[in-house]
Image (cartoon, rainbow, N blue to C red; front, side):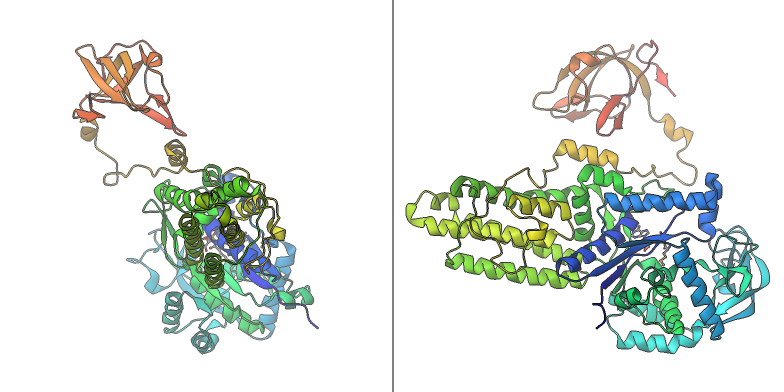
Length: 635
Ligand code: MSP
């Protein structure tokens, strides 16, 4: 009998020309949730991620950094590996396309296809962009220039190798049409069918080595290397052991799900299946293309300066909460926006106020009324209803996870929290505790709440593994002894071990730290060249000496200041009280905006604004180290 087929899930392999960002973490966390979910439910999983290390971009980035290409790809591949540890990613393998185990498979597939006549040599004629080292067709050009960089292109004819992709066009269309589950979401399936409505050409799979040496040599012509996408896609079969470990490969392939972003849909749903078909291999069961994140409404990009660094976010918000936010916030498949407000509100509303609060109040009542032990359940009417609700919620949740509708799955988890919170409120255990004739009812309410928590913990194991374990340990269990999703797993008599709150609420102070840790987009420029000097001159910046300071009543943040401008004294209100005591600022030589319209702040008049820098939520006043009098104009 063959080995049990493992649930095989992949992420794209990431380019090593850049630092990892939110988009990389998104796909990888989603894959991790699926892998953990299936393992929890008794399925063996094989979860693969890795790095895509050949090609122009890696070589160029290495050159720019002044490293050898190998040293560069080694370093950046390790950055991804370390990040996955920090993000608690449970991948079973990590493939690098520069590893021999991968390269030998690429060579083998190339040779097989060449021998079968699926790859042929031909002259390739097209418009070539030298700086981008890329061919374009006539219709790609924009006003006769490179559509990517806008520079001049040259007409070039060169010999290359082609894969007969076009001959699989009808087969692929038929496959997509007869396998609804193959490409998700349906909008992406339609997009691919739209693409296939036009004639599908053959795929150029070689690059002359003289131009692009950083790649895998074609086994049948050493003057050429393999096109980076043809090489990269094969990672999905080289890692599980194609052509090296038949038993392993048979127990893993075909992939159950390839998770990708919407931008790499064509390569995965057109190039990849046709390559597999030509090589005589099964094709993946499902390709799921998720949407893209913007950041505070803007495209995430290095030039805007708003690239979200996952480690920073995880440091301030916690790895589990970050993972939860990513999958709860936006339907998988649609685009979404990453904002501090959304992040903070999600943690506070769903996690701290709802799930966290339910957990702590239940444990407190068990401590107070049942000596920290799980009571018996006597099957009263309310608990019967709760049992059904919890089991139904779990079924819905499981269905959603299996369909990759993560946001709906966690919405269902939160709706169960709501129900249990209402169940507690409605049954008023604090009143039952005062009535000796209601001992059994109180047992039922407490058992119901605690057992619901066990089921809720089971729901969050895949997305918040650390928190789930903590939650279960406080209930006297742990992830390995969590039990099934069926009601009744929690044994009466189990000792609970209440600990810290699962999710401390994000208060204003912490929110400020979170905001300052997030990337601030560079200020939008006016036109191409920034603001004019005339615009700058509109701001009247002046030196000023602080002569007195006092706290503004009922405010933790505000100080009322009198400043000396030489030609006059001014009253200002500044939000610096959390960082400066009134006595610390007297005598300081600061910079103010002197021509702001007067404003009332908490009832106190303010005539100007003090300048300060913000560092991780801490304000530092801008001023002078040398002696300076008040009222001088700053330009
Ligand atoms: N190396 C190729 C994949 C080869 S797989 C055989 C590649 N790498 S990548 O590093 O550029 O991108 C990896 C993934 O990150 C893609 O799925 C892409 O969609 C995703 N994202 C990049 N920016 C993103 C957002 N702003 N939001 C969400 N995902 C995004 O492509």
